[in-house]
Length: 141
Image (cartoon, rainbow, N blue to C red; front, side):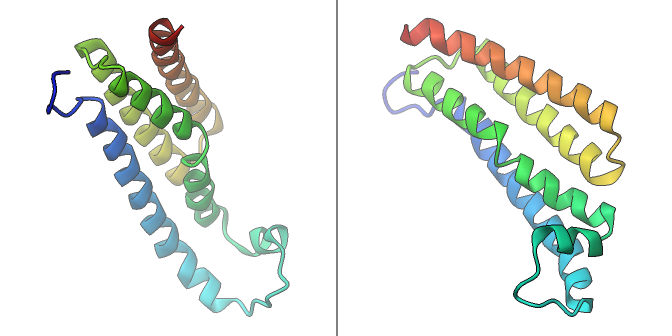
Protein backbone atom coordinates (compact mmCIF):
# COMPACT_ATOMS: atom_id res chain seq x y z
CA UNK A 1 0.00 0.00 0.00
CA UNK A 2 1.49 3.31 -1.01
CA UNK A 3 1.10 6.56 0.88
CA UNK A 4 -2.36 8.08 0.51
CA UNK A 5 -3.87 4.85 -0.79
CA UNK A 6 -6.57 3.05 1.18
CA UNK A 7 -5.88 -0.60 1.94
CA UNK A 8 -8.02 -3.09 0.06
CA UNK A 9 -8.51 -4.87 3.39
CA UNK A 10 -10.70 -2.09 4.72
CA UNK A 11 -13.61 -2.75 2.35
CA UNK A 12 -14.33 -6.26 3.72
CA UNK A 13 -14.10 -4.88 7.27
CA UNK A 14 -16.72 -2.26 6.46
CA UNK A 15 -18.82 -4.79 4.52
CA UNK A 16 -19.03 -7.16 7.50
CA UNK A 17 -19.94 -4.26 9.73
CA UNK A 18 -22.72 -3.27 7.30
CA UNK A 19 -23.93 -6.89 7.32
CA UNK A 20 -24.04 -6.75 11.13
CA UNK A 21 -26.35 -3.74 10.88
CA UNK A 22 -28.53 -5.66 8.40
CA UNK A 23 -28.80 -8.50 10.91
CA UNK A 24 -29.60 -6.02 13.68
CA UNK A 25 -32.44 -4.55 11.62
CA UNK A 26 -33.75 -8.05 10.79
CA UNK A 27 -33.58 -8.95 14.48
CA UNK A 28 -35.61 -5.88 15.50
CA UNK A 29 -38.09 -6.40 12.67
CA UNK A 30 -38.90 -9.88 13.98
CA UNK A 31 -38.54 -9.26 17.72
CA UNK A 32 -40.44 -6.02 18.22
CA UNK A 33 -43.82 -7.43 17.04
CA UNK A 34 -43.41 -10.46 19.33
CA UNK A 35 -42.29 -8.43 22.32
CA UNK A 36 -45.02 -5.84 21.86
CA UNK A 37 -47.65 -8.60 22.22
CA UNK A 38 -46.10 -9.90 25.44
CA UNK A 39 -46.87 -8.29 28.76
CA UNK A 40 -43.25 -8.08 29.87
CA UNK A 41 -42.14 -6.90 33.26
CA UNK A 42 -38.83 -5.17 33.82
CA UNK A 43 -37.73 -8.14 35.91
CA UNK A 44 -38.01 -10.73 33.11
CA UNK A 45 -34.83 -12.74 32.62
CA UNK A 46 -33.32 -13.65 29.26
CA UNK A 47 -34.25 -17.30 29.87
CA UNK A 48 -37.88 -16.39 30.59
CA UNK A 49 -37.95 -14.20 27.50
CA UNK A 50 -36.46 -16.98 25.36
CA UNK A 51 -39.22 -19.40 26.42
CA UNK A 52 -41.82 -16.87 25.23
CA UNK A 53 -40.08 -16.09 21.95
CA UNK A 54 -40.50 -18.33 18.87
CA UNK A 55 -37.28 -20.09 17.86
CA UNK A 56 -37.18 -18.53 14.38
CA UNK A 57 -37.24 -15.09 16.03
CA UNK A 58 -34.51 -16.01 18.56
CA UNK A 59 -32.24 -17.22 15.73
CA UNK A 60 -31.81 -13.67 14.41
CA UNK A 61 -30.81 -12.37 17.85
CA UNK A 62 -28.49 -15.33 18.40
CA UNK A 63 -26.82 -14.66 15.07
CA UNK A 64 -26.47 -10.96 15.80
CA UNK A 65 -24.69 -11.94 19.02
CA UNK A 66 -22.45 -14.32 17.06
CA UNK A 67 -21.45 -11.39 14.84
CA UNK A 68 -20.10 -9.73 18.00
CA UNK A 69 -17.88 -12.72 18.77
CA UNK A 70 -15.44 -14.26 16.24
CA UNK A 71 -15.72 -11.41 13.72
CA UNK A 72 -14.01 -9.16 16.27
CA UNK A 73 -10.91 -11.28 15.68
CA UNK A 74 -11.36 -10.75 11.95
CA UNK A 75 -11.55 -6.98 12.40
CA UNK A 76 -8.35 -6.98 14.45
CA UNK A 77 -6.38 -9.21 12.08
CA UNK A 78 -7.57 -7.38 8.95
CA UNK A 79 -6.51 -4.09 10.53
CA UNK A 80 -3.11 -5.53 11.51
CA UNK A 81 -2.59 -6.65 7.91
CA UNK A 82 -3.76 -3.27 6.58
CA UNK A 83 -1.55 -1.28 8.96
CA UNK A 84 1.41 -3.47 8.08
CA UNK A 85 0.82 -2.61 4.43
CA UNK A 86 0.02 -6.25 3.65
CA UNK A 87 -2.88 -5.84 1.31
CA UNK A 88 -1.90 -8.21 -1.45
CA UNK A 89 -4.44 -10.15 -3.50
CA UNK A 90 -4.22 -13.19 -1.22
CA UNK A 91 -5.05 -11.28 1.96
CA UNK A 92 -7.84 -9.32 0.29
CA UNK A 93 -9.29 -12.54 -1.15
CA UNK A 94 -9.12 -14.21 2.25
CA UNK A 95 -10.86 -11.22 3.86
CA UNK A 96 -13.67 -11.17 1.29
CA UNK A 97 -14.00 -14.95 1.62
CA UNK A 98 -14.37 -14.61 5.38
CA UNK A 99 -17.10 -11.99 4.93
CA UNK A 100 -18.96 -14.12 2.38
CA UNK A 101 -18.84 -17.19 4.60
CA UNK A 102 -20.05 -15.20 7.63
CA UNK A 103 -22.99 -13.84 5.60
CA UNK A 104 -23.81 -17.39 4.53
CA UNK A 105 -23.57 -18.48 8.18
CA UNK A 106 -26.01 -15.71 9.14
CA UNK A 107 -28.50 -16.73 6.46
CA UNK A 108 -28.41 -20.41 7.46
CA UNK A 109 -28.61 -19.56 11.16
CA UNK A 110 -31.45 -17.09 10.75
CA UNK A 111 -33.64 -19.12 8.41
CA UNK A 112 -33.34 -22.88 8.81
CA UNK A 113 -30.81 -23.05 11.68
CA UNK A 114 -29.56 -26.40 10.38
CA UNK A 115 -26.96 -27.05 13.08
CA UNK A 116 -24.60 -29.29 11.09
CA UNK A 117 -24.67 -27.00 8.04
CA UNK A 118 -24.12 -24.00 10.27
CA UNK A 119 -21.25 -25.72 12.09
CA UNK A 120 -19.58 -26.65 8.79
CA UNK A 121 -19.80 -23.05 7.62
CA UNK A 122 -18.39 -21.86 10.94
CA UNK A 123 -15.44 -24.26 10.60
CA UNK A 124 -14.72 -22.84 7.13
CA UNK A 125 -14.79 -19.27 8.46
CA UNK A 126 -12.52 -20.28 11.33
CA UNK A 127 -10.07 -21.82 8.87
CA UNK A 128 -9.98 -18.66 6.77
CA UNK A 129 -9.43 -16.57 9.88
CA UNK A 130 -6.67 -18.91 11.07
CA UNK A 131 -4.85 -18.50 7.75
CA UNK A 132 -5.20 -14.72 7.98
CA UNK A 133 -3.90 -14.82 11.55
CA UNK A 134 -0.93 -16.93 10.50
CA UNK A 135 -0.11 -14.49 7.72
CA UNK A 136 -0.33 -11.58 10.18
CA UNK A 137 1.86 -13.44 12.68
CA UNK A 138 4.56 -13.84 10.04
CA UNK A 139 4.62 -10.07 9.68
CA UNK A 140 4.78 -9.10 13.35
CA UNK A 141 6.95 -11.82 14.89
